[in-house]
Length: 343
Image (cartoon, rainbow, N blue to C red; front, side):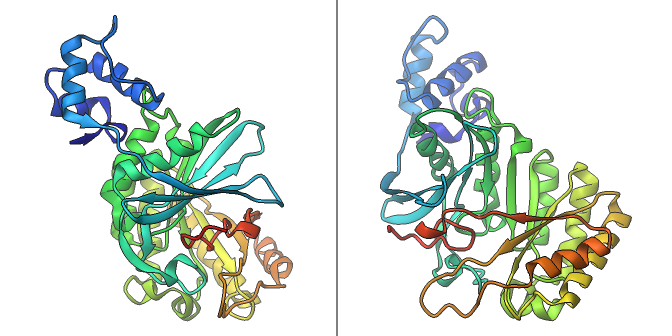
């Protein structure tokens, strides 16, 4: 059966010809508002009956909802048929607006050394409806305000589950569904060139973020095994195509690790590569620097004390950078900490 919260009006009409497009929009609007699918002045009884016969609205269980004590971040531990994954509610500067950090997989196969999810291995991909449900769960629990954006930066590698991610994006940005501007949706990847190229074509208004770690290949490979399969230059070439196709500046994210990728040479290499990217595309990448968040027992890394110096090197090279605040660390909700745990 169709998961009604994970289809667009066009999908519904294609699957159930008895439903007119205008009716499909009304039916899905009701689904996303949490209302029953029923006949009305805008929906014929035959259409409502056909929708109920062809589709259902599966749900996930909220195992735990954990609010940070240090900031307004909230983590949700969710369960779908025994598979557990997490989503995070992120407050924005404008009061009443939130972004939802969603997971695309249960676990992750990429094993980035600085990520708790990477320690889990991959259990399975999430279906499009399970991705959409994460936003619906957060939205239903908002005391006020609205979900303004979505970032695919939770558990898993989004581009390794791209069919489901693209379908979720279509639903998120559909006015009668979640109604989120596609420009407020960001897909974060460790670097799958084929997926980046496909994202540019099939979701050209969605923003791209890449976990760089280091522009020095050996330093990147030391903490990101994916670099052995996808050369950094191939990843950047795909990002250049994305920028030329969409006109959007990618975000380059760097989690600074003490003694691993935080030396002046790493900053200089990043600046050099960013300048080359600008020359090739006419677009400047947005440099986002993150403090490391501990990932639990046996953690091999420490937070770098060299963030200011790293930024100074970038600034001297004419590059602006942003020190990103990653909240909810006290409840393991910060970047790199998601590991399907209730605290």
